[in-house]
Length: 83
Image 1 (cartoon, rainbow, N blue to C red):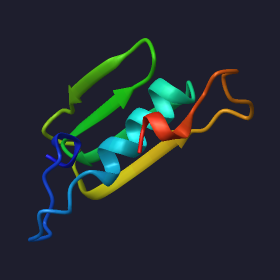
Image 2: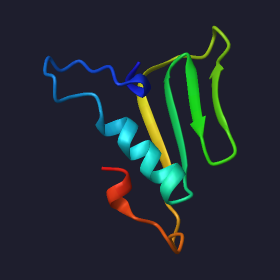
Image 3: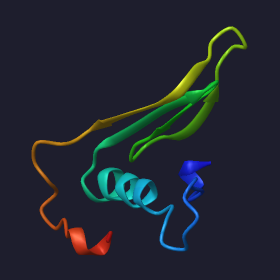
Image 4: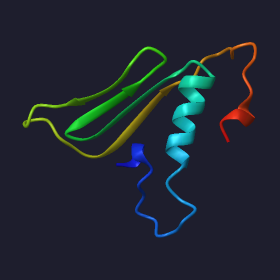
């Protein structure tokens, strides 16, 4: 749900940090994003966008976010296009 902008905070100014960071990292910087939560994981890169349901015997009660941040940025990268 967090990937779609939902948040536990009760405020109109919430729910955009994860989505913005994910787009900045993958589309702008050329990095990779991986999130594991509950019984599924989500992977996003410039070539992949997928949600994978895990077997019923595998469950993570919490959330793990992994990011591969490139050492060098694309030549025309502009952070202001993403914030």
